[in-house]
Image 1 (tube, protein in one colour):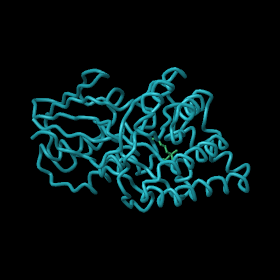
Image 2: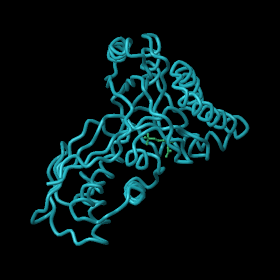
Image 3: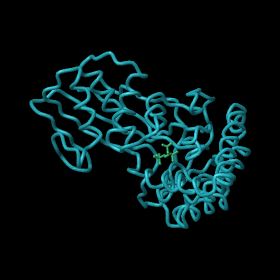
Length: 303
Ligand code: PMV
């Protein structure tokens, strides 16, 4: 029996702008998806979503991983059990984590000797196959861990402050939100273009602040980034309520993380303020999750 895990992620800065070639900073967080695998007679996949064989409705990512890996290893039967701390479909990278953790587990079980780069690349291909479009960011950060400047894939210094995620518990479609921003950009290129490039500048200045562990200034830039995301139409009353609840209860700063429309916000918080911020997010109608940045990407947990 092999168990591999992979983390979720948050965006400090730069979602949406990154689609237009601007910089973003992404950070793996210590919420993990664990995938347990062992050889079996047939394919069995088990998660909170149900027990299936290859099934592209219920377990699309894991099913696609098995089919892709069958192109280079003869997987006859395998039993796969998934459990996860990562909220599903909320911009925290649940699909990337289950995809790369499954690849890593099968890679270990069948001794395929794939490198981390190869795992991240196959993970991205699987996400594209299932979602139609996906940036390589989620699968890369989930595979490698740490804080990463995109698109350079440059690892930055470890983040050492509390991270509180606030989930609106409302699902949203990344594809739709990216399309909405593109429509706005087509209608008002002279306005939206500069907004996206200012978001890119925030990431560039943010890189220096991460290196200096200046979390108060990072918080200020997160607040500005949230305002700019709001201006391109990807916030909502629910998201902004959680952002303001976090700020008003002592967070350094707070913003949407990921595509927006629903899903989650992220707040950077001093240790002393964590309980206040989590409480305020819950009181504003969200579900808070207290976590930390992690340097650990894919981990083989037992062998
Ligand atoms: O919500 P998520 O985790 O899928 O993040 C989307 C990030 C975008 O920049 C909006 C899209 C992308 O592919 O980079």
